[in-house]
Every structure is written in C-alpha cells, then in structure tokens.
Image (cartoon, rainbow, N blue to C red; front, side):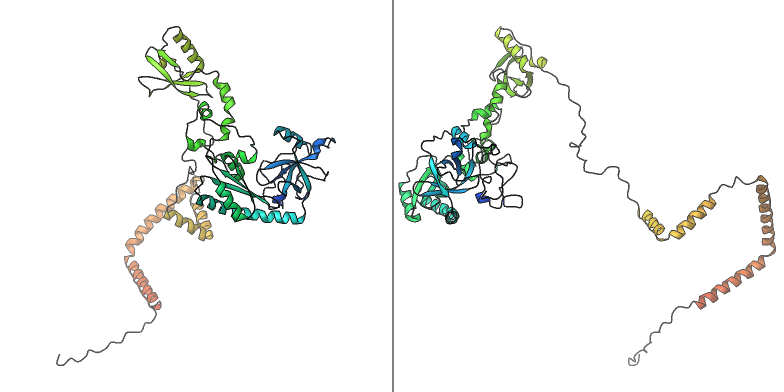
Length: 470
C-alpha cells in the first residue's frame, strides 16, 4: 500500500491522526476519510468476475465516484491514481476495491454504461501539484466569500475544491432561495483565471462536508456513516413525547436532527395499543381530558376540566374499559377511586449518591488539648524517665495484702512506738532544733555568697554643674 500502514479493511486500526499507533501519511490513507466503507470481503479471493474491474475513488471530503480499471492496473486501497475528468484529469485516492465495489454501485444505482476510466497511477509530479492546489483552497474560499458579499448575494460559499490538474475550481454553496450568480461567475473567472463550476448543496450536505461534534458528544452521523438524508418532521418529536423546542431539536446544520427518525418506528408500534390522546372521560364528578402519555410505563394522565391542576394516572387497559362504558351511555366512577396507588420501592443507597455528607469523614477522634500535647511531647523527649516513672508506679501499685498478718501487726506496733518517741523528743529538745535551724540558715547564706552574680561595671556619676549661686 502507498499508505504504508497495511490496514486494508482493518476496522480496529485508526488512521485519523499522525501518531505512533496511527498512520504516518494520513492524506493518502484509505481509512482516514469520512464515510469510509469497511471491506469485509478483503480476505476473500477474487472469483474472476468483472466486478473486480471497478474501484471506488474518493476525492475531497465526502465526494466519491466509481471508475473502471481498463488497463488492468494493480490497484488497491490507498493508491493515488489519475482518473478521467472534463476537462483534463483528476487525482484521487482509492477507498474501496474488489468484490464489494459492485455491491456499492448497485446500492447507489450507478450504471456501468457511462462509467469513467482510470488513466494511470499518479507519479511524483502529479502528487506535488495536487498537494499545492490543496493548500490554496482555503485562501480562495475567503476571497470568494468577499466577492459574493460585495455583490449582495444571499448565499454562502461553504467549500472549494480544485481539480487535480488545476484546470477547474468547484464552488459549493448553500442558499435558501434561487440565486442569480451570472455576474459572480464573471468575477470569479477574472480573479482566479480558470474554469468555474458552481454546485448548490443542502444544509445537511454542508454539515457532512465540514463535520463537527453533535450534542451527544460524538461525531456527526452525516459526516461519518449516514448517506441518505430523509426528511424529518416535528411529528416525529410529538410521537416521542418531546417538547417542541427548536434549540434542542436542531442539529449543527440548523435543521431537525436526523436521529429523531431512528426510534420513530418503535414508538409508533407501541402507540398502537394506546387510546387516542384526545379521549375525554365522562365521570361522576365531571368530564376529564388527557394531559400526558407515558409510553414506557403504558399510562395516561387525566385531569378534570374544572380542576386541571390535579392529575390522575391510569393504566391504558383501564382507560379502554372506561371508554367502552361511556360509549354505552354510562358514567364512569371518579378518578380518585380509579387511581392506582403504587407501593414505593424501598431502596438502599449503597453507593451513597444521595447523601450530602458522603465526602466527610465520620467518627473522627476529638483533637487533644495543649496540655495533652505537651505531656506527649515530654514523654517522647525523655524515654528513660518514662521507664523509671512506670516502674515506680508499678511498685507503689503492688498489693500489700498478700503479706503475712504477723508482719502487719509488728509494723503497726513499731509505728505506734515511733510516734510516742517523736513526741517525747519534740518536748525535750526544742533548743536543739533551733540551733540546727540557725546552722542551716548560715550554710545557705554561705552558699549564696559563693554563687555571686557576674561583676558589672558601675556607671560613672557625673557631678552637678555649678549654676551660679544655686
């Protein structure tokens, strides 16, 4: 393959970006364009039929045409070829080859009689001119819009495409009404000095060419896989019980979204079992009309004409019975009696999605005070003192009841004798205690003299000045 990525028909490979895992030459790879077809017959050997003579060639954006390989050239997906055009020749990339091309031609009603031819494989000179012309297209589009704006034409130039040999420029434009662009073509021919071709496209085709991201977050369906644009009406939104809001129902093109048609058939099948939304019930309390329909729950909401704020939901089978009673001329019971009371489901919030405090940590420990912090810091600083304290506490806390009773009595007696002796000594020697106290005071004074304060220089005293006779 000229691309070099070897991904012919490989849907798991992505050549959309120039990266290590992607394709190095995005501009020439067959898998890097919009509306690419998955070649699910790439592994099947050709049967020798004439269908292998046709190839699908892709040009800028989503334009694809089918050509016949007259000269039996070795063509495969990603080959750059020169094909027949009027005038001159055009350069394109093969996006599909093999047995599957015949099926695509039948799907798009392409006749084999007026099909164009493949000239040759593009050489280096063709590729260089083709790439240079591609670089000029953006500037030409800006100049073309200025010229159309100067002529006061109600049109929009959406895209510009050069032919491969540079002999023709095709301008794609959108307009609500018919535009007289005869003067515009003269201006373009005089400015760009080449043949001019004008093609009007719809707004959906414009979004398919430009591309973009939809409200769903994915690429637009019209630029990736959707080829036939069916008309979309507001009835599709009404059948699906959607609010008619143009801002929500409109896509990037400004029209109604194409995805409104995707689920329309399934809604229509379900609505066949529903009574008409215009049904009116004749009850004992008065007439009631339908306000709302729930397709998934198969219910209908009714309200009285006099009190339209109170809604009552009924099953569709119950509504059919009530309608049959009204046809017989009988009045149905009140809506309050017919209302189905559903038992609410008791659910447990395991993930705690509904709790407001789910991010807060519960069962937190109280913060310690400053005193506790200081005590902890002191304990951490002196581990030896902590050990000694713990040993002393253990000694003091040991039980003393396990000792012998004789020892207890002897100790009690000795303590009584000691207290009596102390009393006698305190009476006999009061003078000795006074002498001892005096000796202690003298010793303290000597110690204080030894621990003198460091010597400080005394400040010089200046004599008073003589102020006359004062």
